[in-house]
Length: 395
Image (cartoon, rainbow, N blue to C red; front, top):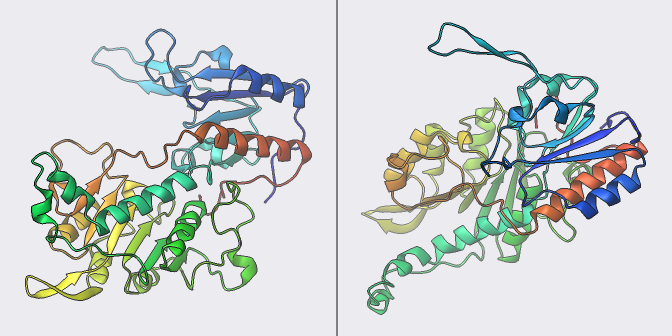
């Protein structure tokens, strides 16, 4: 995939707008400015210096944006004049930030859905890259951790600890190991590939689902995504079976494969919004074990969502949990997000909900700066960048 205009030098300003925990330090800035003579690195914290609160990218003063050609930010700046209405008669106009010389954006998150509807995304001269791959190790561990938690009933036994009577319940819950179980990974990108690597180590059979067909060894490789050394499945060797397509029937065929675990790791786009609805949970309901629950075979598939909440229809998964169409769910993301305290999903059976934390790691700074440095190096040399956001596919 083509990169932005090659070369980094005196005409470039790199604006880095990040939380302090992931922002570079003074030594990094000195090194980068030394590597690209003339480049000016402008570091601005997301924390407001006067209040300490997280501030919006559009609250930055105009001088911060002056001359910016390279940008690191989770959120896009406003590029059109915005009318702000109040109960007062007059209307205020918040001026736009045009960024006429912008040519490269590094988005720290793996998902870039905030940028897809932004006019910058469609500019021919602007390349947007994501932080895809920087979150894969920790998110994959979160996936496997919640899977093991469910299989071995950690939460149930933890609930007995305050009374100290867990011994009385030691045979109430039979643990289940993962050997010879089947995992279906919906979206086989950097995160999905690392999930597959860990799952394979547990003896799980891996099924992969991608939008486009991957019928050859070359097509199953992933040379365009940043990969933490030693992680993932860069050559696409782990899945024993691949599925693909964009139609409902294609998704349903994948879901009908007697899956023990379904991991949702697909990007959020218009076509993946509510991709899993009532019909899809009905398909999963057909995969049941021989054991009985209330006289019926037990639900089999456990669902883990680490993508975006909107990929799953909330009403549909609520119904699926209450009616035991699935064995349970671990949701790091929800729709809406954050989930209101009185939302019914909190009290659904066999569900574990986290506040969108699976991406967190003490290694985020080094990995984020690693992918940024790699892209700056390639940009300077005129080579294809990694993690480029595809303007047609929108991921």
